[in-house]
Length: 65
Image 1 (tube, helix red, strand yellow):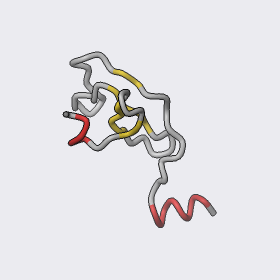
Image 2 (cartoon, helix red, strand yellow):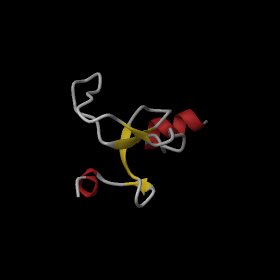
Image 3 (cartoon, one colour):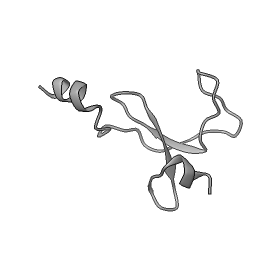
């Protein structure tokens, strides 16, 4: 049943990794530069920028500030 809900409404991103801080200049498998600190959804694999000062996920625009 939960898979059907995910298909209809998308991944809720409830199962994520602990924040990961990448070395500067490190690239992902798709060739893009990684964010300084990020978390990854363990269900769908999407990455989200993470702000250690605020201790929460931030949008990409806010993360650059």
